[in-house]
Length: 306
Ligand SMILES: Nc1ncnc2c1ncn2[C@@H]1O[C@H](COP(=O)(O)OP(=O)(O)O)[C@@H](O)[C@H]1O
Ligand SMILES: [Mg+2]
Image (cartoon, rainbow, N blue to C red; front, side):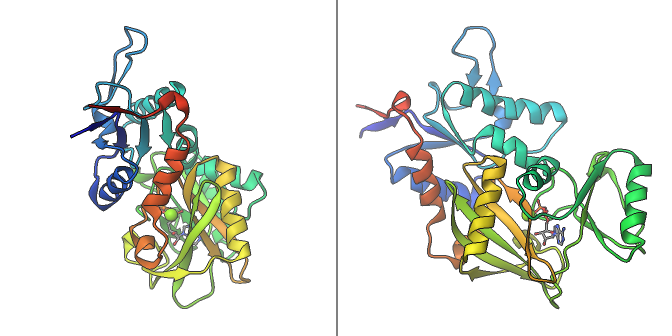
């Protein structure tokens, strides 16, 4: 049987359902693929052209789909991102692009870029000094407002805390020495909800609401997903948010405030889509792979080995 080469690398430590979906979508394009843990990649900076080594790849991959980069020490995270940067610099399609991943993995840079682009996003204060954080906390929560405190590299709702005048300035080692304090957006409903919009290649493609009795409405925290029809405002805001951070595709989280004005609270460059796929007919994995394959230039053209 003909074997296809080179292969696509799916960077993940936990392939699961998403990994299988990607593999199937790649196979539909006649592309083989292999899961790669970024922890198992290594660099040999000796012979030019052979520096980056992905386990299972004797040749450079045709493309790299980044499904997960695990946390670690600062050095480990930088090294893992640098491998993606190096692959991209070599002309290999890395999807999402590493610069975009870097901007969005860090909630501070995302907030900054959203605000700079004029996209409605909650006011956010970031600092290292406890006195400064205490000052912001007193100023905001002393007026009866609430703040959300988040770990910079958090995801899926883990470690997010709600602060009010009774809680004090909660801060522990999960925040790794940086205070990220954001105005709490109260949608005014009995139940909390937010909206996830999936954007591929600059176009909003599918949306859902995530509803919960808890104010943290990530699906991973038990929120119920329900399909939502995209309207002009959701489309415009989510497309602008993805453009502001410069990613190829993404999951944009939005919350309406009590007046109904949408605020973008997060842009995810490695979003899960299990919950959204359950409530939409739009095939997310296929569309992602279609977009990635469209980016392959002639330099990486597919060869079929006998
Ligand atoms: N400023 C905010 N106001 C109200 N709710 C928020 C705010 N920020 C986050 N949340 C809630 O917490 C959830 C997780 O926050 P988010 O910033 O998306 O981080 P992550 O999903 O990376 O953990 C959101 O989906 C939303 O339900
Ligand atoms: Mg989120």
